Image: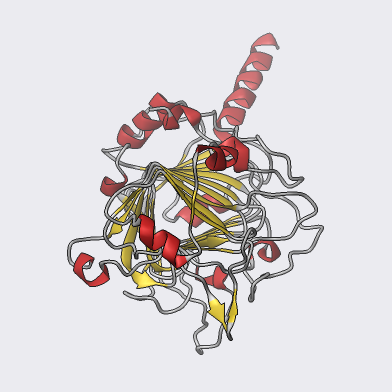
Length: 395
């Protein structure tokens, strides 16, 4: 009887281990990605060709996860996966891309690709979210971009979604067109907390959308686009990354501030990074022609800090957005700023003459100088950044 009890207990423990993946350390993550070994118990493997894998598509693996708060890990083996990913569960999820160079996004071996823009098969307009390669949001309502300067009015009873989403060494590529042809998301991220480490995001227009109450942290990643390709209502911190200009249109950033019942710091912060032409072929055609951003509404907030800017940036830095003769830039409300940027793209005289770029000093940047100072929870409380992989960021 005792032996039967012990065997039953061990079986239950094994089953629990297979369902609830353990947290990853920096070392075990790299080992899992490079060799498939030392992965957390219960890690699900995806491959389009390896028959030993658990699933052939990433979405099937995501759909297999229990709808609870357990921590889950999915290892995606090298290859290109043509599919649209949708994550709605609240429990922590880690997506690992197989790689031989876990600290270099330029050498990623896993690509998730989808070809779509904000139009259906008949050419009729649809919400921007339907173009996304990856969507992280608890509900469809929470993910909708909407139109105009205020966007979709998300219902008050909409829940907050994933509190700890992580992706490593995965490229998300929208192949709709080789130029700006309407919104074509690589990422749509709303009402969730998430970190993207050594990932790539490629499109032309509206590449990365961080929606309402979205908190997204990007580390040593590549974000490429042409028109307004960093935009949204939420908060994005882009750290030590490459912002690549595949052309010029609108601006790099086009944020939409949101009125709430509490003060906020919603916006996009590009820190210790580089903004430059995507390649030597495009560089001559965009020299001095690309704007750092333009205000989707007057509450736009974006800051480029300690970041290199190449000669693609126009002299004024940012530009205003004038619609039907009405300027969206509002003095002392709109914040389109730089702090200690450097490189041929910075023109001090041009910034003054342009009249919309704020060049911050140390005191002006201090309220935005760390992720904990800008990321807020659904109640407006600052400081919860436990979901960021600080072990990896410190390497």
